[in-house]
Length: 149
Image (cartoon, rainbow, N blue to C red; front, side, top):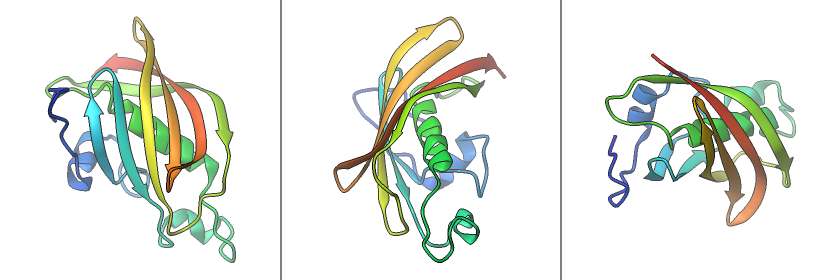
């Protein structure tokens, strides 16, 4: 993964699978569109009817679960801290100020914008905003605890 903040590298699904500890079906992002290490990241998550969650989350009227939007925000925000050659494990320590503003359904493409807020020792916090077609559908803050792998 590029650590140069001036030349943002798109990270595709195959690379995401190699970087994240989560694996299918729990990877909740499809592509990292922009990344400035230590500053911000923007990712894409396509919502398809074949998502495993739709088997039980209202099959007749599928709605993408809020907890998976939170997980997508957490995975997106984690890329702010990912650096090539540095092995660390990040865990969600807190989820705050989350609001779901619109329903997310199959066919939607989520754009998740996360920005670094603060770091104190091994604790870091980001704010995330989630958009569908330039309309905010969710927002919140994720706090991570990091351990050296």
